[in-house]
Amino acid sequence: MILDTIAEATALRVTQQKKQIPPKELEEAAIRTAKAQHHCFPFEQALRQWDINFICEVKKASPSKGIIAEDFPYVQIAREYEQAGAAAVSVLTEPQFFLGKDEYLEEIVNAVKIPVLRKDFTIDPYQIYQSKLLGASAVLLICSLLEQPVLKEYLDICQQLGLSALVEAHDEQEIETAADAGARIIGVNNRNLKTFDVDIQNSRKLRTLVPESIIFVAESGIRTADDVQALRDAGVHAVLIGETLMRSPDKQKMLHTLRGNAYD
Ligand SMILES: O=P(O)(O)OC[C@@H](O)[C@@H](O)c1c[nH]c2ccccc12
Image 1 (tube, rainbow, N blue to C red):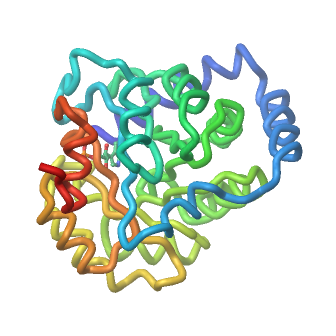
Image 2 (image 1 turned 135 degrees about the horizontal axis):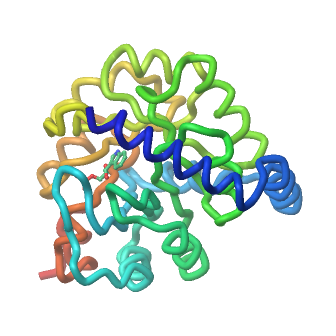
């Protein structure tokens, strides 16, 4: 199964990275960085600004779609998202299956003012400390990769670092796990990471299971203004959109169209 394969590759990557910078050293540096900042969780705040808020993703490729963007001026793309009114940017850093890089994230953080989510497959606390040092405002925690006590432990580390966590759930059971662990932001993925099937109704169906005190993000497969409207009507706080924007030559115009106020 693809998710297990990606998780295994990630574990190998982290093992290699630990030889460069030992975990203790990385952890201490991240905690120092956090202490020098005030903890205001900008990612979380950004997702409660408007009736619906856009997290726009910078993604070159994916295992289900192959190469999405041949031409990949990632900093420029992030700037366009910001100019078009995105609430936050999501950056894939997984190198093998999504052709991401930590450097993309670092450069984008330095180029935009809106908060940046590090999209990677978190299976080790090392990656959370790393994300802090790369300048991310949030990390992704995928429920199906993390057992219950581990999820809670990772959320505590995020809290200590002033990092937000987007906790990804795919079904009723995972939503319960996420809420029990204390997630403040739950993302429901419309793409089943085991089969790659996309069903945009998934996040609508599961919306009512998440209390209003927790931010609800609908993720994946969002293509049209009607999709966005349906999710707005269902009361989601934010949508996470990658491919539709990455394939669009005019990202600013596409974001306006999706929002339902095309200026043409
Ligand atoms: O490109 P899309 O269909 O708009 O989807 C974006 C985002 O939701 C998707 O990239 C994603 C959601 N959860 C993930 C977990 C890992 C990697 C990627 C993802």
